[in-house]
Length: 272
Image (cartoon, rainbow, N blue to C red):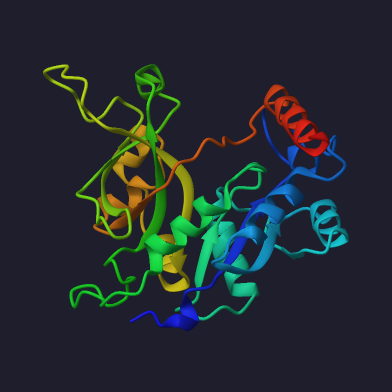
């Protein structure tokens, strides 16, 4: 079982300078501090996190993070995704196989701490480990993530909004098993009764280091290639995903326009 010593996680934030739509966005600092530092601050607010580390391939990012009092490690420039960068960071930090890490994107400066805590709860809430998957967490899941209810059907139709279909929710913890992730409008409301519940996938992941390492050995899967959603690799290879249901309104920063909108919100909050 995952004991109490494992209920605190290490937040690792992959960050790099390269970005097609918004180059050097990790260091954008119109608020007075780099965007990646805002992410660090949000991660530090989570009750389930006891350490925050940025994993980067840029000395500029490392220096900026450390100048604001946070920890950073240098990783390879060869990584093609944040998950592999995370795995190398865990190795550099000499984390044990049972340690829980939470992967927080470096372009989400408004991520709610309750979302971070939700992903960690999904990955390692204390329960008996099912005998058929002793290497997984207490939900029998290889990874924990978060979904947020969608109230706007037009948002649910948007292929840029990733939806997740979940199993029955455990009422005491608001946690369920993921059945499928898609850019399509799922589930299909055949009778258009209007009672179908849609859930937006919030792209945050928590897992044990052993599960993280297992992911590195999995081959890219057909549905992953079709939907361009790397979380489908877990499901296609038979690794269950636990999903915590949390209200969430934050979005990542992909463009300069989105960043300017964030700056306005931040400055407004600071002046109020």
